[in-house]
Length: 89
Image (cartoon, rainbow, N blue to C red; front, side, top):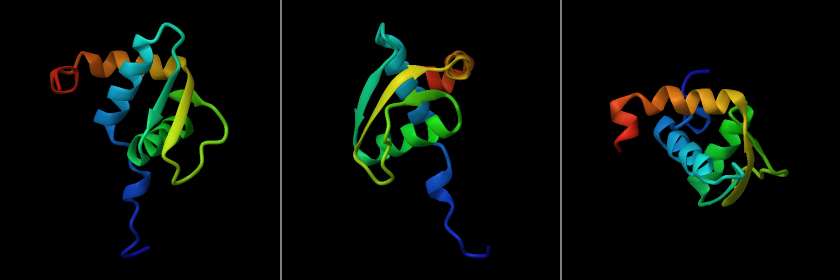
């Protein structure tokens, strides 16, 4: 569709990496995030299968809770941890 704005469905990899790192630092693997951008990123990460999120993740909400990181999420984090531009920003 010409002119359609699909930017809201594009994952911000740097933010996803940061959120996963914060969740990994928690021994339970859970994390509460605040802010519209972070909550939206959690929704996208859950849809991608990187994490499990507490229901409901409300579209446009300002809070979200990661309940656990999936195997794919751990793999994603490890892969990007070895990329200099992600791990050191």
